[in-house]
Image: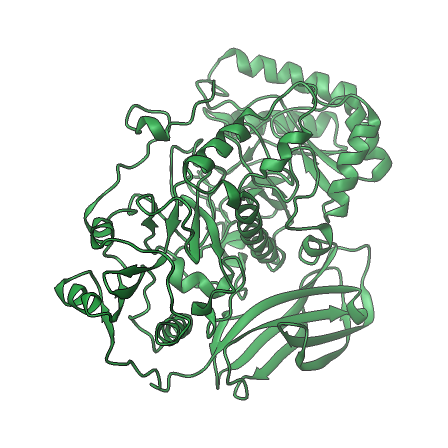
Length: 617
């Protein structure tokens, strides 16, 4: 609103109260020191502050090599601690963010000096990522390395933790020393950074100095791609995936015994560096439409029930076995607390429930509460279920979705007038000319769209700042009411049941299709480009009907339960009276998807087509 940080206590009270409402107890000031009003507000609310020297010395500036930054940081540290050192909220001081040079030696000397001069807080050489050296001498390690989700290469689950990487130091690369254990507290550096699509309605909130010209650009790109009417749906679908990623990222930290905590890069969005839409809150610290603190504090709070789910897709006859534990960062232990669980289907119908008895939950992590064991042999219809663990009758609760699919009983009969192929070959064209239906399973075959790199996880930070580093997509918008999903229960967004179908899967660029066509499954492109994408299209072609998909619904179906069920649902749909495409396409449009290859987008260079270059004038 103003172009400078608030200097009144009331503004900082509002910000810190929002942080506390979202289950956080401290705030890191990334490479800067706030005005005294922030300390006053934090003192009143009991918020811990990590203050940093005003440096990010790795862009041509380095520490410990004789540059002016060395003396400046010494002088600035002296001023900061002299001015604000008496505030009880000032509990951590770090010299800055992600330094370069001989920063370890410089930081060790500085930390040692200030530990002697003013031991009222913890001192840290710097807040750094996983690739930085080990900051020997620090009283607190604010580090990356052991953070994030490894779902690009492994199926989602909530059974793992970072124990080995934290205790043995495996999450740290390039450090000079190799201690077998980490004795000082270790807090995760800049966790999260999972993105959502822009909220274009947010522009009306810019009533001060700044105008949301960036959002105007993103709105123009969306309109050019024929998707201006989908902005709110993109926001909702991408936002729900964002919340899911934060949930499982934070829970993994809470399951790790020797992790002392975590720092998000931001609870709210950051409008700099190309627009980083990483928060459940917008830049004004207001809730976005797709979430609220009640949902967030299930997994980010003083006390959190946790379930170690081995996977999230099952088939009939499997048994769900989920060890249950609790994270407790409250002021003391809980004795004789009631622990219970229930499994519900969509609509809230209770499928099963049970008690884990009365439990002692001491302060700390990995407090075992027992195990949920649920045979799934009676579940014969595909459905989404939800496991909910409740403490003290629901005073504290958390929940996890999972899916159960029927066994493969080879009952999916394929009629003679349904032709299945992997390209629009002559056999397919002949069948369409005769009025038959054709299913093209084109996974890995399409070229028009192969410049878009998709994983299950959404964009990290933003594609502009990282010059179109993949992934490029931010979840998917799904028409859950479409009859092709009748036998494949789905949300309107890319929940965990879609992982094996979308992770590293190819998308189609649908820019050659009519502008008003929206596919039933639509990956959401980076907002810096906004290409219309799809993984399913259906159309009338010649005298027949065609469905084409880049989902892999043919390989390893004995173990890929979701893919097997989606194939069954698609074939069932194509052989029903509901298969009545409204779109008509010429065969050459389909052929072009296999033959045309788009130029990759390289942000802000002359390699990008002019029509795809964002302008930040």
